[in-house]
Length: 364
Image (cartoon, rainbow, N blue to C red; front, side, top):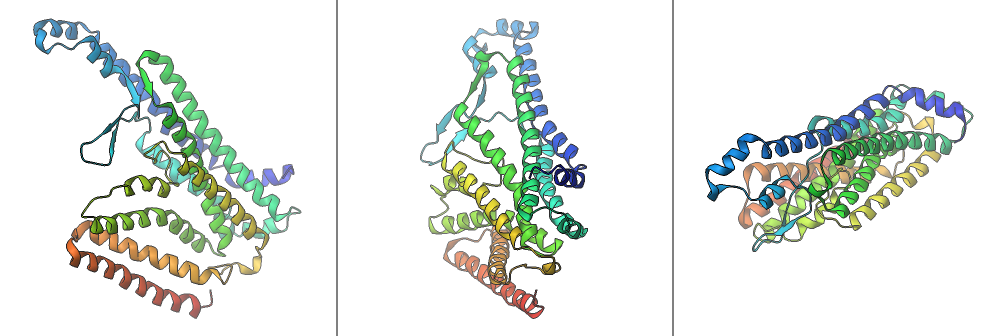
Protein backbone atom coordinates (compact mmCIF):
# COMPACT_ATOMS: atom_id res chain seq x y z
CA UNK A 1 0.00 0.00 0.00
CA UNK A 2 3.03 2.30 -0.22
CA UNK A 3 3.00 2.44 -4.02
CA UNK A 4 2.50 6.06 -5.10
CA UNK A 5 1.11 4.96 -8.46
CA UNK A 6 -1.75 3.08 -6.80
CA UNK A 7 -2.64 6.03 -4.58
CA UNK A 8 -2.56 8.36 -7.57
CA UNK A 9 -4.77 6.04 -9.61
CA UNK A 10 -7.39 5.77 -6.84
CA UNK A 11 -7.19 9.52 -6.17
CA UNK A 12 -7.90 10.38 -9.80
CA UNK A 13 -11.04 8.25 -9.67
CA UNK A 14 -12.61 10.13 -6.77
CA UNK A 15 -10.92 13.55 -6.80
CA UNK A 16 -14.15 15.19 -7.97
CA UNK A 17 -15.99 13.81 -4.91
CA UNK A 18 -13.51 15.00 -2.29
CA UNK A 19 -14.43 18.73 -2.42
CA UNK A 20 -18.12 17.80 -2.22
CA UNK A 21 -17.55 15.67 0.88
CA UNK A 22 -15.39 18.27 2.63
CA UNK A 23 -17.79 21.12 1.82
CA UNK A 24 -20.81 19.15 3.03
CA UNK A 25 -19.14 18.44 6.38
CA UNK A 26 -18.05 22.07 6.72
CA UNK A 27 -21.58 23.33 6.13
CA UNK A 28 -23.25 20.64 8.22
CA UNK A 29 -21.42 21.22 11.52
CA UNK A 30 -19.28 24.36 11.52
CA UNK A 31 -22.11 26.52 10.18
CA UNK A 32 -24.43 24.96 12.76
CA UNK A 33 -22.16 25.96 15.64
CA UNK A 34 -21.77 29.46 14.18
CA UNK A 35 -25.56 29.83 13.96
CA UNK A 36 -25.99 28.64 17.56
CA UNK A 37 -23.33 31.06 18.79
CA UNK A 38 -24.93 33.97 16.91
CA UNK A 39 -28.36 33.09 18.30
CA UNK A 40 -26.93 33.04 21.81
CA UNK A 41 -25.31 36.44 21.30
CA UNK A 42 -28.65 37.85 20.12
CA UNK A 43 -30.41 36.50 23.23
CA UNK A 44 -27.66 37.86 25.46
CA UNK A 45 -27.91 41.26 23.78
CA UNK A 46 -31.67 41.24 24.34
CA UNK A 47 -31.29 40.71 28.09
CA UNK A 48 -28.85 43.64 28.26
CA UNK A 49 -30.88 45.96 26.04
CA UNK A 50 -32.53 49.12 27.31
CA UNK A 51 -35.97 47.86 26.26
CA UNK A 52 -35.64 44.72 28.38
CA UNK A 53 -34.28 46.57 31.39
CA UNK A 54 -37.15 49.02 31.14
CA UNK A 55 -39.70 46.17 30.93
CA UNK A 56 -38.22 44.70 34.10
CA UNK A 57 -39.18 47.87 36.00
CA UNK A 58 -42.75 48.06 34.68
CA UNK A 59 -44.12 45.07 36.59
CA UNK A 60 -41.95 43.69 39.37
CA UNK A 61 -44.17 40.62 39.78
CA UNK A 62 -43.41 39.40 36.26
CA UNK A 63 -39.79 40.52 36.14
CA UNK A 64 -37.23 37.81 35.47
CA UNK A 65 -34.71 37.04 38.20
CA UNK A 66 -30.98 36.86 37.54
CA UNK A 67 -31.14 33.08 37.94
CA UNK A 68 -33.94 32.78 35.35
CA UNK A 69 -31.97 34.88 32.89
CA UNK A 70 -28.82 32.82 33.44
CA UNK A 71 -30.79 29.58 33.05
CA UNK A 72 -32.29 30.85 29.80
CA UNK A 73 -28.83 31.73 28.46
CA UNK A 74 -27.20 28.48 29.56
CA UNK A 75 -26.52 26.21 26.59
CA UNK A 76 -27.07 22.54 27.34
CA UNK A 77 -26.20 19.38 25.48
CA UNK A 78 -28.14 16.56 27.17
CA UNK A 79 -27.08 17.98 30.53
CA UNK A 80 -30.46 17.43 32.15
CA UNK A 81 -32.47 14.26 32.17
CA UNK A 82 -36.04 14.45 33.49
CA UNK A 83 -37.95 11.25 34.13
CA UNK A 84 -41.60 11.59 33.21
CA UNK A 85 -44.22 10.38 35.64
CA UNK A 86 -45.36 6.79 35.01
CA UNK A 87 -43.35 6.67 31.79
CA UNK A 88 -40.14 4.76 31.25
CA UNK A 89 -38.64 7.41 29.02
CA UNK A 90 -36.68 10.63 29.29
CA UNK A 91 -36.88 14.17 27.97
CA UNK A 92 -33.62 15.66 26.71
CA UNK A 93 -32.53 19.20 25.92
CA UNK A 94 -30.46 19.26 22.72
CA UNK A 95 -27.93 21.71 21.36
CA UNK A 96 -28.93 21.64 17.70
CA UNK A 97 -25.71 22.29 15.77
CA UNK A 98 -26.45 20.24 12.65
CA UNK A 99 -27.72 22.07 9.57
CA UNK A 100 -30.53 20.14 7.86
CA UNK A 101 -29.72 19.89 4.15
CA UNK A 102 -25.89 19.80 4.45
CA UNK A 103 -26.18 17.18 7.20
CA UNK A 104 -28.29 15.00 4.89
CA UNK A 105 -25.71 15.55 2.15
CA UNK A 106 -22.95 14.22 4.43
CA UNK A 107 -24.87 10.94 4.67
CA UNK A 108 -25.47 10.78 0.92
CA UNK A 109 -21.94 11.76 -0.05
CA UNK A 110 -20.39 9.23 2.35
CA UNK A 111 -22.35 6.45 0.62
CA UNK A 112 -21.70 7.80 -2.89
CA UNK A 113 -18.02 8.18 -2.04
CA UNK A 114 -17.75 4.47 -1.26
CA UNK A 115 -19.86 3.55 -4.29
CA UNK A 116 -17.55 5.49 -6.61
CA UNK A 117 -14.54 3.46 -5.52
CA UNK A 118 -16.00 0.05 -6.45
CA UNK A 119 -19.55 0.12 -7.87
CA UNK A 120 -18.91 2.99 -10.29
CA UNK A 121 -15.55 1.50 -11.22
CA UNK A 122 -17.27 -1.77 -12.12
CA UNK A 123 -19.96 0.07 -14.10
CA UNK A 124 -17.35 1.96 -16.18
CA UNK A 125 -15.27 -1.26 -16.49
CA UNK A 126 -12.43 0.44 -14.69
CA UNK A 127 -11.92 -2.79 -12.74
CA UNK A 128 -10.53 -4.34 -15.94
CA UNK A 129 -7.76 -1.74 -15.94
CA UNK A 130 -7.20 -2.18 -12.19
CA UNK A 131 -6.78 -5.94 -12.64
CA UNK A 132 -3.87 -5.31 -15.02
CA UNK A 133 -1.94 -3.22 -12.49
CA UNK A 134 1.02 -4.87 -10.71
CA UNK A 135 -0.56 -4.55 -7.28
CA UNK A 136 -2.10 -7.15 -5.03
CA UNK A 137 -5.85 -7.21 -4.50
CA UNK A 138 -5.40 -6.59 -0.78
CA UNK A 139 -3.27 -3.50 -1.50
CA UNK A 140 -5.90 -2.12 -3.87
CA UNK A 141 -8.66 -2.70 -1.31
CA UNK A 142 -6.55 -1.17 1.47
CA UNK A 143 -5.83 1.99 -0.52
CA UNK A 144 -9.50 2.43 -1.39
CA UNK A 145 -10.52 2.10 2.27
CA UNK A 146 -7.72 4.27 3.68
CA UNK A 147 -8.32 7.00 1.12
CA UNK A 148 -11.99 7.25 2.05
CA UNK A 149 -11.31 7.03 5.79
CA UNK A 150 -8.78 9.87 5.57
CA UNK A 151 -11.11 12.17 3.61
CA UNK A 152 -14.13 11.53 5.85
CA UNK A 153 -12.11 11.80 9.07
CA UNK A 154 -10.48 15.09 8.03
CA UNK A 155 -13.77 16.61 6.87
CA UNK A 156 -15.67 15.48 9.97
CA UNK A 157 -13.22 16.44 12.71
CA UNK A 158 -12.04 19.69 11.07
CA UNK A 159 -15.65 20.87 10.75
CA UNK A 160 -16.55 19.88 14.32
CA UNK A 161 -13.30 21.30 15.70
CA UNK A 162 -13.66 24.66 13.99
CA UNK A 163 -17.32 24.84 14.99
CA UNK A 164 -16.65 24.03 18.65
CA UNK A 165 -13.74 26.48 18.72
CA UNK A 166 -15.92 29.27 17.36
CA UNK A 167 -18.74 28.43 19.77
CA UNK A 168 -16.60 28.28 22.90
CA UNK A 169 -14.79 31.51 22.04
CA UNK A 170 -18.05 33.45 21.58
CA UNK A 171 -20.05 31.93 24.46
CA UNK A 172 -18.59 32.36 27.99
CA UNK A 173 -17.73 29.11 29.77
CA UNK A 174 -20.13 29.92 32.62
CA UNK A 175 -23.05 29.55 30.20
CA UNK A 176 -21.94 26.20 28.74
CA UNK A 177 -23.41 23.16 30.47
CA UNK A 178 -22.59 20.12 28.33
CA UNK A 179 -22.87 16.47 29.27
CA UNK A 180 -19.31 15.81 28.10
CA UNK A 181 -19.69 12.02 28.22
CA UNK A 182 -22.66 12.12 25.86
CA UNK A 183 -21.03 14.75 23.66
CA UNK A 184 -17.82 12.76 23.14
CA UNK A 185 -19.71 9.50 22.68
CA UNK A 186 -21.88 11.14 20.03
CA UNK A 187 -18.80 12.53 18.29
CA UNK A 188 -17.07 9.13 18.23
CA UNK A 189 -20.25 7.24 17.38
CA UNK A 190 -21.06 9.58 14.51
CA UNK A 191 -17.53 9.26 13.12
CA UNK A 192 -17.85 5.46 13.19
CA UNK A 193 -21.30 5.75 11.56
CA UNK A 194 -19.86 7.77 8.67
CA UNK A 195 -17.11 5.19 8.18
CA UNK A 196 -19.72 2.41 8.11
CA UNK A 197 -21.79 4.35 5.57
CA UNK A 198 -18.66 4.61 3.44
CA UNK A 199 -17.66 0.93 3.77
CA UNK A 200 -21.04 -0.68 3.07
CA UNK A 201 -21.15 0.17 -0.68
CA UNK A 202 -17.51 -0.92 -1.05
CA UNK A 203 -18.26 -4.36 0.40
CA UNK A 204 -21.52 -4.57 -1.56
CA UNK A 205 -19.61 -3.75 -4.74
CA UNK A 206 -17.31 -6.71 -4.20
CA UNK A 207 -20.19 -9.07 -3.38
CA UNK A 208 -22.08 -8.34 -6.59
CA UNK A 209 -20.85 -8.52 -10.16
CA UNK A 210 -23.11 -5.71 -11.40
CA UNK A 211 -23.52 -2.06 -10.47
CA UNK A 212 -27.26 -2.59 -9.96
CA UNK A 213 -26.62 -5.51 -7.63
CA UNK A 214 -24.18 -3.45 -5.56
CA UNK A 215 -26.70 -0.62 -5.28
CA UNK A 216 -29.48 -3.03 -4.22
CA UNK A 217 -27.25 -4.67 -1.60
CA UNK A 218 -26.31 -1.24 -0.25
CA UNK A 219 -29.93 -0.11 -0.01
CA UNK A 220 -30.91 -3.39 1.64
CA UNK A 221 -28.15 -3.09 4.23
CA UNK A 222 -29.25 0.42 5.17
CA UNK A 223 -32.95 -0.47 5.28
CA UNK A 224 -32.55 -3.64 7.36
CA UNK A 225 -31.91 -2.11 10.85
CA UNK A 226 -34.63 0.56 10.64
CA UNK A 227 -37.21 -1.79 9.12
CA UNK A 228 -36.55 -4.50 11.73
CA UNK A 229 -36.71 -1.91 14.52
CA UNK A 230 -40.04 -0.50 13.33
CA UNK A 231 -41.46 -4.00 12.84
CA UNK A 232 -40.37 -5.01 16.34
CA UNK A 233 -41.93 -1.88 17.82
CA UNK A 234 -45.22 -2.59 16.06
CA UNK A 235 -45.26 -6.16 17.37
CA UNK A 236 -44.22 -5.02 20.85
CA UNK A 237 -46.99 -2.41 20.98
CA UNK A 238 -49.59 -4.99 19.98
CA UNK A 239 -48.40 -7.43 22.65
CA UNK A 240 -47.99 -4.84 25.42
CA UNK A 241 -51.01 -2.59 24.71
CA UNK A 242 -49.21 0.26 22.98
CA UNK A 243 -46.27 0.50 25.39
CA UNK A 244 -42.73 0.48 24.07
CA UNK A 245 -41.05 -0.01 27.46
CA UNK A 246 -37.36 -0.89 27.31
CA UNK A 247 -37.56 -1.42 23.55
CA UNK A 248 -37.04 2.31 23.03
CA UNK A 249 -33.61 1.98 24.63
CA UNK A 250 -32.68 -1.07 22.54
CA UNK A 251 -33.24 1.10 19.48
CA UNK A 252 -29.69 2.47 19.87
CA UNK A 253 -28.36 -0.88 18.67
CA UNK A 254 -30.26 -0.44 15.40
CA UNK A 255 -28.82 3.02 14.76
CA UNK A 256 -25.26 2.11 13.87
CA UNK A 257 -25.74 3.84 10.49
CA UNK A 258 -27.12 7.08 11.99
CA UNK A 259 -24.71 9.88 13.00
CA UNK A 260 -25.90 11.54 16.20
CA UNK A 261 -28.69 8.97 16.39
CA UNK A 262 -28.01 7.45 19.82
CA UNK A 263 -30.40 8.34 22.62
CA UNK A 264 -28.45 7.21 25.69
CA UNK A 265 -24.79 7.67 26.68
CA UNK A 266 -24.16 3.91 26.60
CA UNK A 267 -20.89 2.31 25.54
CA UNK A 268 -22.27 -0.91 24.07
CA UNK A 269 -23.65 0.71 20.87
CA UNK A 270 -20.17 2.14 20.26
CA UNK A 271 -18.67 -1.32 20.68
CA UNK A 272 -21.26 -2.67 18.25
CA UNK A 273 -20.23 -0.05 15.70
CA UNK A 274 -16.58 -1.09 16.02
CA UNK A 275 -17.59 -4.75 15.55
CA UNK A 276 -19.66 -3.87 12.46
CA UNK A 277 -16.79 -1.79 11.07
CA UNK A 278 -14.24 -4.58 11.58
CA UNK A 279 -16.70 -7.11 10.16
CA UNK A 280 -17.13 -5.06 7.00
CA UNK A 281 -13.35 -4.83 6.55
CA UNK A 282 -12.93 -8.59 7.01
CA UNK A 283 -15.79 -9.39 4.62
CA UNK A 284 -14.33 -6.98 2.11
CA UNK A 285 -10.90 -8.61 2.35
CA UNK A 286 -12.45 -12.05 1.99
CA UNK A 287 -14.44 -10.96 -1.06
CA UNK A 288 -11.67 -9.06 -2.81
CA UNK A 289 -9.25 -11.98 -2.62
CA UNK A 290 -11.80 -14.20 -4.38
CA UNK A 291 -12.87 -11.55 -6.87
CA UNK A 292 -12.62 -12.44 -10.54
CA UNK A 293 -13.47 -10.61 -13.75
CA UNK A 294 -15.34 -13.74 -14.81
CA UNK A 295 -18.08 -12.94 -12.31
CA UNK A 296 -18.82 -9.53 -13.88
CA UNK A 297 -22.43 -9.32 -14.94
CA UNK A 298 -23.68 -11.73 -12.27
CA UNK A 299 -26.03 -10.39 -9.64
CA UNK A 300 -24.38 -12.46 -6.93
CA UNK A 301 -20.69 -13.28 -7.16
CA UNK A 302 -21.02 -16.28 -4.85
CA UNK A 303 -23.78 -18.86 -5.49
CA UNK A 304 -24.39 -19.40 -1.76
CA UNK A 305 -25.46 -15.78 -1.48
CA UNK A 306 -28.57 -16.41 -3.54
CA UNK A 307 -30.66 -18.05 -0.83
CA UNK A 308 -29.50 -15.69 1.91
CA UNK A 309 -30.14 -12.55 -0.13
CA UNK A 310 -33.50 -13.90 -1.31
CA UNK A 311 -34.71 -14.56 2.25
CA UNK A 312 -33.31 -11.33 3.70
CA UNK A 313 -34.54 -9.18 0.80
CA UNK A 314 -38.02 -10.72 0.91
CA UNK A 315 -38.17 -10.22 4.68
CA UNK A 316 -37.23 -6.55 4.30
CA UNK A 317 -39.96 -5.97 1.70
CA UNK A 318 -42.53 -7.86 3.80
CA UNK A 319 -41.74 -5.91 6.96
CA UNK A 320 -41.61 -2.62 5.05
CA UNK A 321 -45.07 -3.13 3.53
CA UNK A 322 -46.53 -4.27 6.86
CA UNK A 323 -45.04 -1.24 8.63
CA UNK A 324 -46.44 1.14 6.01
CA UNK A 325 -49.93 -0.35 6.27
CA UNK A 326 -49.73 -0.19 10.06
CA UNK A 327 -48.70 3.48 9.89
CA UNK A 328 -51.65 4.49 7.71
CA UNK A 329 -54.34 2.02 8.82
CA UNK A 330 -53.51 1.97 12.57
CA UNK A 331 -54.39 -1.70 13.00
CA UNK A 332 -55.31 -2.51 16.60
CA UNK A 333 -56.69 -5.30 18.84
CA UNK A 334 -56.09 -9.01 18.20
CA UNK A 335 -57.65 -9.03 14.73
CA UNK A 336 -55.49 -6.11 13.65
CA UNK A 337 -52.37 -7.83 14.95
CA UNK A 338 -53.20 -11.02 13.05
CA UNK A 339 -53.83 -8.98 9.91
CA UNK A 340 -50.48 -7.22 10.40
CA UNK A 341 -48.63 -10.56 10.65
CA UNK A 342 -50.60 -12.00 7.72
CA UNK A 343 -49.62 -9.06 5.50
CA UNK A 344 -45.96 -9.62 6.36
CA UNK A 345 -46.14 -13.37 5.60
CA UNK A 346 -48.07 -12.94 2.34
CA UNK A 347 -45.79 -10.20 0.97
CA UNK A 348 -42.69 -12.13 1.98
CA UNK A 349 -44.04 -15.29 0.33
CA UNK A 350 -44.79 -13.44 -2.92
CA UNK A 351 -41.29 -11.96 -2.96
CA UNK A 352 -39.65 -15.34 -2.28
CA UNK A 353 -41.65 -17.02 -5.04
CA UNK A 354 -41.00 -14.40 -7.69
CA UNK A 355 -37.42 -13.81 -6.59
CA UNK A 356 -36.61 -17.52 -6.74
CA UNK A 357 -38.01 -17.79 -10.27
CA UNK A 358 -35.96 -14.78 -11.37
CA UNK A 359 -32.67 -15.65 -9.63
CA UNK A 360 -32.54 -19.40 -10.13
CA UNK A 361 -34.31 -19.32 -13.48
CA UNK A 362 -31.67 -17.03 -14.96
CA UNK A 363 -28.82 -18.53 -12.92
CA UNK A 364 -27.62 -15.15 -11.67
